[in-house]
Length: 212
Image (cartoon, rainbow, N blue to C red; front, side, top):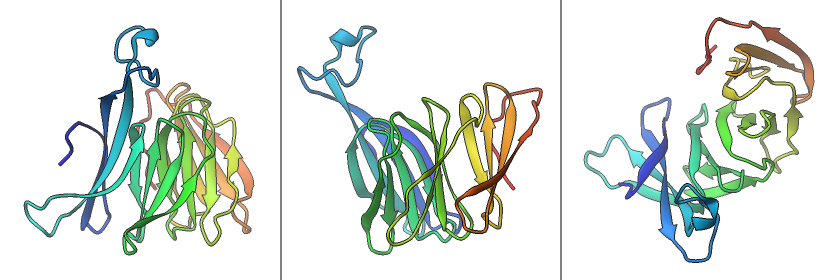
């Protein structure tokens, strides 16, 4: 189990796995990477995040520690095939891809300057999308060998809270809690180039989850 606060959790679609991310402040004199008091200059700790994996078929099992990073694990998501796990690190803005069968990290995306608020795979695991907490932009990577450059979707609304791909994987929804709108992005056949964008709303209240 985690020895600190759990910051994120995900269940695979087949129910076989549960993944969780945590954060813990480690005392480290002289470092100012995390404010442990109200004043930044008093900070003496660094945040360490852990990702753990449970097999639901094994009762009372100890989780497998699959990664340890400097920074809070802010988001976790299993791929649609349940072969991959993606997780995000608030500390450095990176997104990591873990292969469950190979039991190792296979990719690292260094595209975001700030924390990541949401992650989403498309249906065929051809793409991974991530949203930045700082500027609200959404980045989409086409997955493969090698992983291609991310495309950046701007004007996605204020404070994007969630993402969802369509069943075909050719459309992506993003919801902004600041303006209460939903953006619908449609990709061209040579994915992931964007073809069109529509704005739905505004709706009367905040939007915290999306689904097709």
